[in-house]
Amino acid sequence: MMEFLRKHRQTIFIITISGFFAGVFVGFGGYFLGRKSINDAVAEVNNIKIPYKQYVQIFNRSLNDMRKEEDEITEDLLNKKKQEVLQDLIQEEVFWQEAKKYGITISDGELAADIHHYPAFQQDGRFDQRAYYHILRNILHTTPKQFEESRRRQIAIFKLRHLIASSVGISEAELRFEYARANKGDMSKFNEERASFMENLKQQKVSMVFAEWFKKLNQTVKIKVHLQEIEGGA
Image 1 (tube, rainbow, N blue to C red):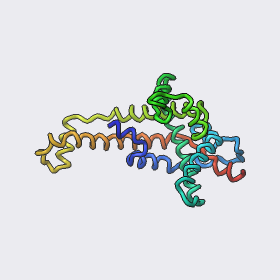
Image 2 (spheres, rainbow, N blue to C red):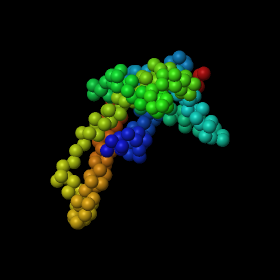
Image 3 (cartoon, helix red, strand yellow):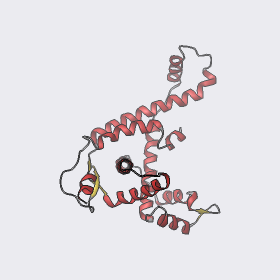
Image 4 (tube, rainbow, N blue to C red):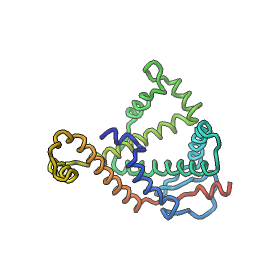
C-alpha cells in the first residue's frame, strides 16, 4: 500500500489528476484578462500567486535535461514542457493548500531528516553540507531556502495523500463478497489469493476515493493562468 502511494506518477494517479488539470487551460478559471509582466504571477490558485520567476527557473532546469536527451527540441516539445511545468506548479500549490486545511505541518526537524537522507547529499553514508550546497547551486540552480520550501511542501502533500488513502478500509465480509463476485462464486482459492486480492481491491477503492476528492477540488478551486499574457507580451 505504501509503495502504491509513493509512486507519484503511478497510472491511477495520472488518470485522476489529468482529468483534474485538463480544465486549467479550458474553462477552469480561464485566463485573467489584462496586461501582465514578467514580474507578475504565472498563475494564481485561490488568489495565491505562483511567481513567474519560479516557473522560469524550473522550466530552464527541465530544458537543460531535455537537451541531454533530445537530438532536436521542437516547438511542440517546448510547449508541452511549458504546460507540464505549469501544471506541476499549480498541482503543488493546490495540494499544499489542501494539506494546510487538514492541519498537516512539517517540523524543521522532519525536514532536516528528509534532506539528510538524500543519497546525493551524502559522502560515505553521511550528510555532507558541501555536497548539498554544491548540488543546489550548480546542478539544481536553486537556493537552500527554495529547495527546502519545496521539500516541505512535498512531504506535506505525501502525508495528505497517505491520510486520505488510509481512510479506506475493507471488511472481511466485503472482501469475501468481492472475491466471490470476481470469481463467479468459486472460493476454492480464496485463502491462497487473499492477500493479493485484498491489495488490489484496496488500490481500486483508493483510486475511487482520490477521483472523488479531485472531482470536489475541481468544483471549488479557482485557478487563473497568466503564462500566455506574460510571454506573449515579453
